Length: 172
Image (tube, rainbow, N blue to C red; front, side, top):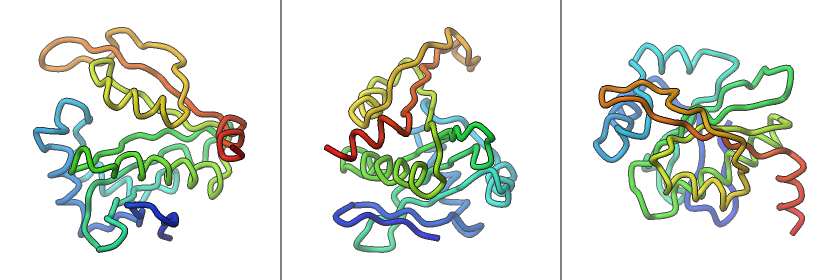
């Protein structure tokens, strides 16, 4: 099942095993390395087969060229809460991330009928946090020094968008 919105610069399609080398290269690229958790090939492969996850490739809308990927988790959550586990864009500053996030919101609330769409973002990533805020996500709190890395501990912000907020924004 693919997703595309009229006028969007990005379309979402299911990630296939043949896409996994691209996925691994995208998350390990120097522009993404500090912001994205690193999974192994096997972890990504398992996500493709997990009915609780949706692993998407982001393609430029007018041509089949990959520009990133995204993973949703919690599709079977009894509380209707879906996590944006990961979104990675390989070409920054072209609007692909925003377009993909808008489509992911639509998929989460209209296809999966979720109540809540949430994510965590590293505190040292204000660019991503600003995008999430512009797209209606609300800051819920901070997990202080919750992530251990090679260069110390990092804090994570938790942000979420509720169905009622999504619906109200859509009606404007």
